[in-house]
Length: 190
Image: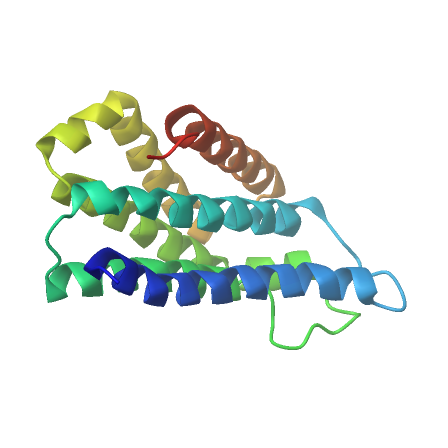
């Protein structure tokens, strides 16, 4: 086993836990004896985290080409990045999902943590992209830089506001943007 595969085993465990938490939350909603009060904002961010986490793991395959030599610092950085996704995923569902829980209220109550960690995620992504070299960073284009900075700014606003229209538009735009970026830039690896 090469160093890349060795690193990816640990990363895959963390990402697997994040996806498991998200999927388990969705299954618990579906299995409730009586329907839960569902609203769109919470589920949009759940879908966003599912796409983002799966996309992030897929993208890490590219590290095999971009990081031929692994240092302990690079290993810890990638683990931190994966752990940040796990943390974001766990903020979307409580450990025990009460059937009477209003998931939008739960989401709004934790929006400071969720969007603060999301802003950190985007900043770490900028650092990660730059660490992979000037050529790689340039290949992402100006669009990447503008969208990432805009997402950080929108996360800072989202931390403070409970405005449902803002959260709905931001959530849908983030979901569509992430999915579109993943398909356009990383549809084929290798």
